[in-house]
Length: 113
Length: 113
Image (cartoon, rainbow over all chains, first blue to last red; front, side, top):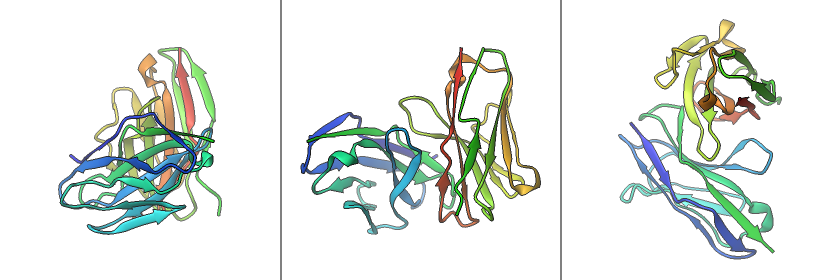
């Protein structure tokens, strides 16, 4: 079945630093790809998504591009803020057309001022 | 629009006891999911309903876990008997039929002692 591997954390950055969190997937076909964020004490929120190869998802300054050739969906942000401190989860659709999600283990980001 | 409602928010039980969690999805969402999130890991799908039928329960430990979605609206997830390794956050999510607009509830944190 489909699976997701994301870089382990924690990732510790200073404010305004560049962020990359790596995510690769193994899948049959081309499932939709997602990044979810979980802020301290809050529930899972969709950050961005891409539904087909070469699509770029973006939201709140974060971006990720669906790379079919490298089976990757790396999350990037040019200048992080303290308020970006959270746990980030990469996810893919289960099966080719499934709507259930398969999540990575999560990467904790801590940004200091 | 109201979100996905879950209750209780927290539950502590002893091993071998039983417990039930309740979820009320967003009105009109045909698909409902239960996920288990163990501390330090990403959510794992337990069961997916479409209306009141089960779409995927391949990862549900059926010897102890059961779930139902009567009338295609609210859902209940039950564990009987609970084990220590069942300690986790149980997340409910819902989506319209085509999967767009996936929304998670805040979860129920279960501690088995």
